[in-house]
Length: 314
Image (cartoon, rainbow, N blue to C red):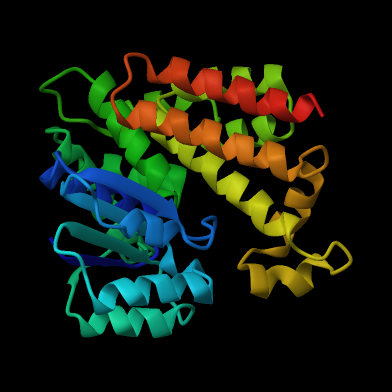
């Protein structure tokens, strides 16, 4: 056991790095915490000695968002680590949380880089590697066509590659014609479309967009990720001063002004209690989906129904 530091802003790669670490010790008890959402004492509780002495893995996602008192909980553990605990820490980069990051680095953890992929050549390589992971061959032109069509969203690029690898006949090299056919039949529905309808309390629209997204190959994990991201944004904005303009809050919240304005509109009808309920409901669905639920789509549909109804009931 030990410490692993995942460093960089590419969430797709960070998720995969975390997943690969968890697979290495399937018998361990795993706790995953989003650092922007946890309360004082949560880290200490997760790190408390186990009565049964089993291996444990604590994953702290986006540690740059930890409040100072929560950073102190991590620092205290680092000063006297428990050998039965594997600590996995993801820092997205930048100067925020740098003091804690420096303390972690002094302990010489295993470092996994997940830097943001921005250059077209890097995106093309990512897509090529996605097809290779699926055991499929693809032409250079087909890779470029996907990058041109979907831009910088790695989750969409990954989902498209996965869908093409599944749809195109086995043994055939995937080419531009396959990509064009995929694009023509693709309804432009993303996980964030599902999230918007859900958090607006539009139950019927949320279910329609969910089915469109699933039908066109959007991975259920990406939909829960989009929902989680949107709920985190609502939580961040809900605690801000309503009298302060969005562009003045942008820096402190780490959000663009348009996203703050959108969250303020969506927050109408939400309460701290219903937001908490949404977080718990989504976490349960996410656990079912990642735990290979018999029907991930059904698990996600139930969660979306409950979350959308939580708002519409207010």
